[in-house]
Amino acid sequence: MIDLSVSLGRLALRNPILVASGTFGYAKEMAPFVDFAKLGGVIPKTVTHAPRAGNRPPRTVETASGMLNAIGLDNDGLEHFLTHHLPYLKTLPTAIVGNIAGKSEDEFVAMAARVHQSRDGLAALELNLSCPNVAGGTDFATDPELTKRIIRRCRDACPDLPLIAKLTPNVTDITLIARAAADGGADAVSAVNTFVGMAVDWRRRKPILGNVTGGLSGPAIKPLALRAVWRIAQLKAVPVIAVGGIASLDDVMDFLVVGASAVQIGTANFYDPTASVRIVDALPGAVASLGATAARQVVGTLNT
Image (cartoon, rainbow, N blue to C red):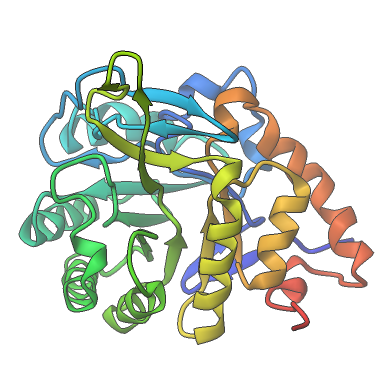
């Protein structure tokens, strides 16, 4: 029997396979396709303090081995999430990790405090410090001191929930940000959010996305995400949840071996909503093939 359970600071999961925020809706949309009981956890769409209409369309464009999105955090706001989406989410037989984004440091703290009041049903809270598709969206996770301070203040405002810091790859040295997140009290970091990119229609001499730039995700970014996770894991300062181009069992095992304790399936959900469940089913065999009896035994075992 292979033990797939993992621990990310204070967050315990039945297995290391989560689905990424922004790619799984609020889970209800995926109910016809996914056995939620098989997942390690679900991270619903990012919510902001007030409702947001998001960016003007077009909001997505397919690229070679990936996609660009500039949704702009379209959502109905935190109160709507707590009263309309969380009641359904907490009935699901898996860990639910909330995800919030603030316009300012103070707003992050206020939202964390509000989540703490209604935390029943949540296993953890992911702080989206790194959305590239809103004004100032990546500013928080590009500054180590600001990252540390936001996490520390959110930790104080929301003491009973494990905190995960979602980091941007659009920095010179992501390890500085990861260490700052650890020093601020994060239970784990998610690495990485999307890479800023753009697409143009040269015949019209126009950008394709309404926002001009967007976040690149999908298989194209996997080698870059893999390196980022490997570098953060080498710090041995904070558990890492890998995000970026993960669509297969081999992708998952690659990230575990370089040091990720868990992974998030993202863009793959759009074209194969059953991917996460199939990966979970195949994971015990892959772990056993390395001579291990538990998923955590293969974490960080890369030979260099």
